[in-house]
Length: 473
Image (cartoon, rainbow, N blue to C red; front, side):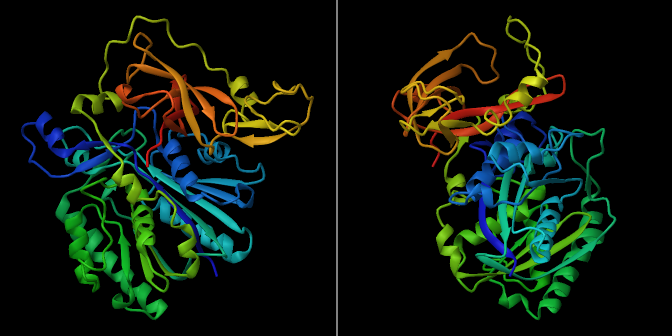
């Protein structure tokens, strides 16, 4: 039976407190809590990669047949993002990649397509990765409410949560939208959006889903339901017959914020973290319609408890010191650049040439002496054996910081630039930039891990590679 074989999530390390935003705009009403903020070198692609890596923990990448990337904030308007994600994950060349966009149901739309593919037999394992970095206009309520995050699900016939049923409808309705000329999310008047939109169609769609599955609200252990804010979720949950305190999954508003199309998937991942065998879980995506899924948890759930998922990412955080830093990271304020030469031209042929080992951080391992090496070599640097190597992934290997240097003169949006020489546990040394670090805490011998990040942007091209970061959790 088609269902969820594995799950993963990603929440950026950084948080911005809502009182800090309110302090910048004296006229705003104070709102408690905080929101997750993608780092200056993160976007929807890098966060999707992080969530997918969490989901693929212990899963052979060669078993994945398709990769679906879902987001309304893809870094590209015309270029597939799923191919970048697949390349970073080191998936086989024959994997079918697709982008889902244009709606807050992009994530649940991708799940629908993945379930259909598995049930039809056209794919065995479909990896769905959904990530968002939506922005609200400064001094607006959405600047307070919108957060960044990602989730990933592996859809398969061999599952830890079987699909019991699903139900979908479409709705042509303007509640939240962003045109091709908009940077910030727009919305209509709150009462109209609530009464003519969400409260009118969501309870009715859930009732129809229960009828189709011959279930009732009391049968559901946890319901992961998208809503723009917790108040509306509580109102709708009561109307649908749920116990708001016991059955509604935490919408993550106080700790992460509204992560758009990724939110119902992140809530479902959080529900799976605590689920017991036999539990029935509901997931609802909302945006220009509704997607409802009902899953039943199976015994394999206990074999995939080692994910970072939502809980561990929530427990690991660092506060952004002030609102101006957030504005700078989002590119909403121009600052004086350092007096340095401009960035060199990005070479598209070089990106293409390095796609196999650069994008996925793959090197080679000598079959003669067993030494890992990066980049790939023809002659072993240790035993001088020629053309006797096997592919080797550095991205998921344990590593320690050998030595480092803080460069306070290099152009950086998060100075100083930390250059790190990293030694891998099984052998091999690579030089990386270090990110998500407190410069004062960087010490030789500290444990680090690899993370896929943006390097720079030039002439419409987002350049990605790997950095190291202190082990997060």
